[in-house]
Amino acid sequence: MKICPDCEISYSESAKFCRKCGGSLVVGATPPEGVIDPDLDSSGVAGGGPKAWVNKVQDWCLSQIRIAAPAYPFLIGSGVLVVLGLIFSWWLVLLGLGAGAFLAYCFRDPERPIPSGPEVVVAPADGKVLFVDTVWEDRFLKASARRVAISLSLLDVHVTRAPVESMVVKTEHQPGQFAAPITREADKTSERRIWMLVDEYERRFLLVQMAGQLTRRIIPFAQGGQRLARGERLGMICFGSRVDLFLPLEVQITVAPGEKVLAGSDAVAILPIAK
Image (cartoon, rainbow, N blue to C red; front, side):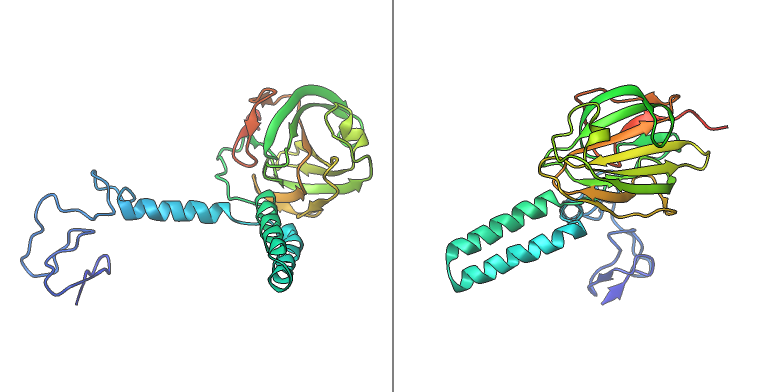
């Protein structure tokens, strides 16, 4: 067996050159023109062949089936139903498998590509932009702010992400109503968790996670004093509801009501260049 010294790929004794780099495996041997690795595309760039596309699909699937940790107790319960069904009745097996699949989907936590650029503010949650307005925030910011409200459906990813690179200077739970948070005053009346974030330029951002009729749990992943990267996971609203993001007045909003956004990936605003 021969091994290419550059690529460290093994070949049979009859091989004369490496199909990856074209290097000679036999003294004096020259690779014929036009012979390329089957995992290279027609231009010779890696990642274009059939095997490479299979690997890409596999990587995508693995990135999508990540399940958030709060789902584990529910999934264990579904597993118990399956075990009981194997003992007592097949319909319990179906119920357990169906519940497990539904919960796994609701609690999915896929990886997201995070945009670069210090001025980009990414969406804190998946969902539809409910409204964009300017309000006076009198409890934490005590200042006027631009607000982007995002409504999460039951089928959206429920993990909340940091909109900017920042530090958590305060987070607190506030009790309230378990109602559909569709009004502009819902951030004052709903069950909610408040996050005060400050970036390196001392700009302040307020993020409010709100519970709804189905949502009874808002689970924090981060804590006060913790530094967060842009797009980093900071919490979760089980089964969706609403997230409000309060931004400095000077931002340029890049979304409009009715638009769908993905947490951590889609920009909702652009900050002015800090001096």
